[in-house]
Amino acid sequence: MATLDDLKKRIASVKSTQKITKAMKMVAAAKLRRAQENAERGRPYSEKMNNIILNLSNGIPDKENAPKLLSGTGEEKIYLCIVLTSDRGLCGGFNTNIIKKAKAYFEKIFIEGKKLKIITVGSKGYDQLKRIYKKNIIEKISFKDSKTISYLDAEKVGKIIIENFEKKEFDVCTIFYNKFKNVITQIPQEQQIIPLKNSETEKNSFDDNYEFEPEQDEILSNLLPKNISTQIFKGMLENSASEQGSRMSAMDSATRNAGDMVDKLTIEYNRSRQAAITKELIEIISGAESL
Amino acid sequence: MSEEFKVEIINPEKSFLSKEDVTEVVIPSFEGEMGLLKDHISIISFLKPGIIKIFSKAEEKNYYVEDGIAEFKNNNLSILTSSIFNIKDMDKNKIEEIIKKTDNMLSGEKLTDQEKYLADQKIETLKLLN
Image (tube, rainbow over all chains, first blue to last red; front, side, top):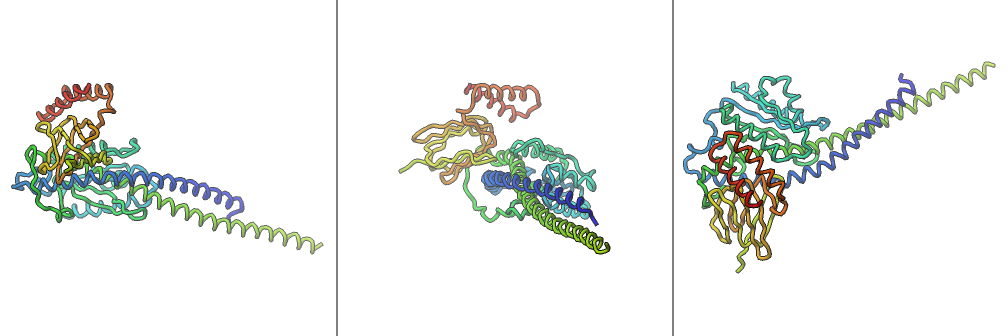
């Protein structure tokens, strides 16, 4: 049985851990609000962008000459997956959920006998994926140094993707990120960005008579690369809100668990203290009796 | 009859500007400057580096943009851009800095004709401001 001293030390250490997790929860809560605001403010841009592209692509008369970023290369041999994760740990199942989703997708690709390439954004994703998929990872990107998510960062990722696409390094590109629903729920998402899929927005595709300047396909070929950066940016914003939300709830339950543990240890401590006192009393009494 | 329409400028981080009482907007569209009034036909165009002028009855506002796309529909003008600055906030140092950067880009890397054209436009606009 642990001695009184040991118990005391353990209680103290659990208490200090609790302090840390509590502080982390507070910080995450504050950051969450900011991240959530950012995510909401970023939404109009990506929505508008989507709408315009939809209007443009509907207006294109022959789909065969459409830009490759829209229609694809015509093959589906090499898959590129962009896995967006966080740079910091201690955020519950946040990274694991994305990785799990991504891994399921990877396995599907392997079973179909196709080639896989991976770009990881965020160091945690790379750490988890390098064990199995090291040879598939062609690039790892991390924005550890930038405090807030800026569009420039997303643009960098977008450029890498487009460069690779132009070199015909891949045919299909999918991004993985966590969509922020609320503090407790984040939904891992897979979203195909090349070729572009318009499954959700298809219903409001009424034909508008737009005038275009310059020609439609020229606008489109300028706009599509931007759309990729925009989609990545959207993923990053959603991700950061999710990360903070996930960290907040993880730290909340850690704080609660630490509290439970302190209670349990305190009871044990008091019991053994009492036992020691009783033992000493018995010793004194029996010593007095024997006199 | 009012001749005002709504303009919205959105950049990736946030909605940059939203104004309901605009009478005319001049945008630096790719093939030249374009003035938009109320009841303009629906149009989509993309922007080259230049100056967006927004006129309302009370005031005139000028913004410098580097790229973007503009959509006009049902008397709603939305401009999506990733780089926009209020001209009031731009001082000489900043302008010089951008000009220098662009100059370096022009002399250093191999550019396509279109990129060259855009960079030239950028320098021209900035020099006018200076």
